[in-house]
Image (cartoon, rainbow, N blue to C red):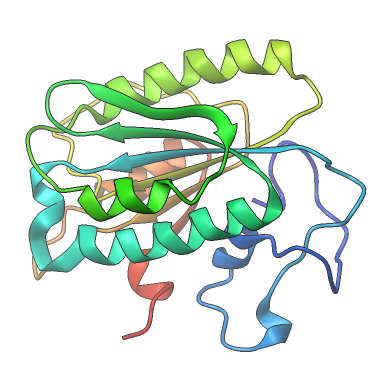
Length: 203
């Protein structure tokens, strides 16, 4: 995400951690693996997080591990005073949890109660997020916006997708001996960076 549509960031050695950017390099093991935000360049950030919590994400502890990763992401957003937009894709329709509010510790309670079930309205979630983001960009043109999409990519078919107008990171949580590998294709069409969750957590 450091090389997205907003342009490449200059390296910083201290300050607040650029958590999504750090994840692109894999799970950080040493201090030198962390990326940091510059203190003055982007005073206001929005992280648009879409979580696929459909029934298929129950398999092989996929959603459980994703929740651990999200908890770390939310904590980092809270420390950095970033704003969050959080959209879940499960059941019949996607559901907004927050829309552009400052990250708060209250998200932990929601995350603890998050369970997998129902269908996969992922495409509807992407469409909804795209409309919401376009409206917000008109209101806050200077806002630094990012997309984090957590999904196993288990969608049977989809039309040609358009990239959202911000840098994106797709975290693939598909596991098991038989993998369809559709999340990587989704990332390509969305022009988002791709990482599998096993690259980002301890084994």
